[in-house]
Length: 206
Ligand SMILES: [Cu+2]
Image (cartoon, rainbow, N blue to C red):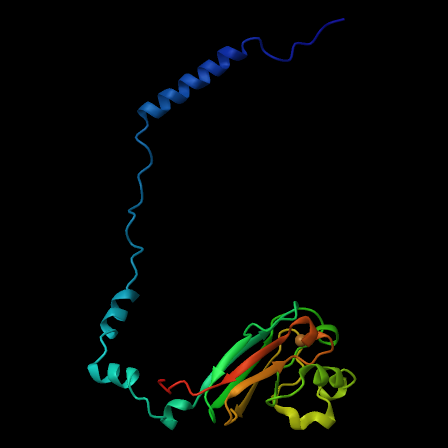
């Protein structure tokens, strides 16, 4: 029998040679030329600074002005997501009495509408959320709004499937308070797909 010698007995010598070569290379190579590290400076910051200075008038108008000015009240937009975890992306928001409010609901989930659809249903003050949610269960054909309780709905979207969105506009109630909103898809309110819209007069100083 012949034994086959696979490993050169000179392995240590090879390693030593490699090592010494590396050492040589390190010492003698000048290294690749580095690209100039400049260039990445943004120009946006400067423009912001230019816009920044606020006139005294503007500052005063913002800080003071305790009087209710209708013009300031209008035009609030809220983007609310719904997801496969049965959560609203915006669990609370605040509006002023009589304000024009736009809500854009977007279903950012991927599960099918039939099993994980979402809507946004804003309920009148004092609505029994659990009772409403229970009553909604059989009404898939009405976007899970119980027809006999539509008077308890201030505003609502339809049920949205994945990737769908809907924008609704309504006038905030005149009465201050905390208004519940829910996704009335069966099981979702109980799972936590609820939120609160607070109606309050922000500008009342004290
Ligand atoms: Cu839902």
